[in-house]
Amino acid sequence: MSEETLASLKPRSRALSRTLAQIVQRLQLEDAHLITLAQLQSLCDDLGVRSAGKVVAARLKSNGWLLATGQPGVYEFCPMERGGAISRGDVTLPLQSLLAKRHELRAAVTFQSAAWMHNFADRLPTRLEVATPKSVSRVSVAKEIESELRLSSFTPRLGPQQLRGVPVLAPESILVHMAQSPRDVRSWASAFEWLPELTEAVSLELIKEELEGRHSAIAVRLGYLVQRLRPDIASECSAYIHGRVDFGKRGEKYRFDSTWHIRDSVLPKHPSSFVSLAS
Picture: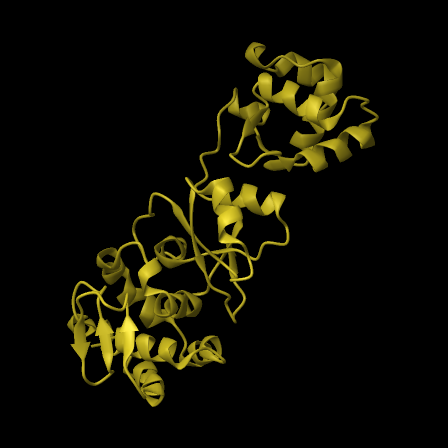
């Protein structure tokens, strides 16, 4: 596509100078989605554009070719076919923009958000739920995207899957994360709706791999949670029972399970109430 063709097709509301047209043309040819200031500066250097990346970003943003993402220095590109400054509306955009800026961050979608991406849950929470390693400062990350992402500390043993452009925890990792941090699950009532399908799909061997090296209390909570849905997993986890374990916050009103020695203060009903899909 020549610069003249691009100029003739562009919407009046998104005017372009000849210099900016070169940049937009390259972004369209590369099918760009998110672009950082560093990438924009590199593109300017490659095309021989003398203006600084910040200046170019400001001009493209003012003309509707770039949209703010909530992450400073990260923008969403609006190609010509959208006809204006219209976002793709991708639910994963907040996480994509965070990862575009912080390449070192090992983050992955978890809990109901991940279950939805795996097609086990039928609805997505208001805020995307994301697992980050304990080594990551949750405070510093939360300040950047606290209104868009809900963070919980978890480092998976299994590699995440790439879905909708972002890393998503494997089904086995989701279950173990729920057992590790039951208080971080936004709604256990909602979780009870999709847990049967998720639990049916997991592999016992991969569950064992995900539990490897973790605290025994996590295995006990997991066995308690899936006792009716996956007796094979529960049987493996029962070997770790040796003392009382809290499923929720200690000190709150709880339901006590004498078999698992669990003090459950968060589940809406006992896990034995699940109906196994295999039955």
